[in-house]
Image: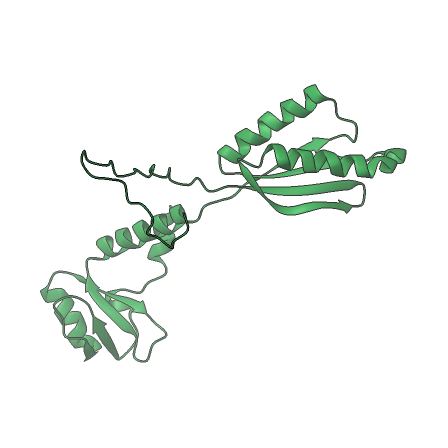
Length: 201
């Protein structure tokens, strides 16, 4: 269990070897206490003395329920993991002479990947003498990027790497829809303002 790995990271109560510790936390004056006094304070509160920073001089401890402490740590780790957004790169392969049907099929797939938030790496693979068609491959990749301009921005223009010409696209961030600007209605009897004499219309 992951909780067990967390348990082994922190010394508690009699496991703490230091002669004195600095205690931090709620409702406790943050200062240095002899270890016996710190243990006594924890015992009186029916809580644990947990060493949270063993390398400090003296080590820093908290008086807290150890199970609650581990739960808070686990929760924090989970939140940090959730914030780390994993970006996948999906590859789409073309031949230098891809027909329209195949092209449109792959374009549809790419659109789906980008809408899911994935990056798209499209490449044209040149076999043998087909390297002579490298300009054709470049045109194909630029057309591909152009057809996806509403969904993606180009990270890297077509580059020839060995037998592969590659282009990389990232999904565009969705913008919030803009509110339409409303022109103020002219109330009856009120004339629309005309430019003053001497001003250009």
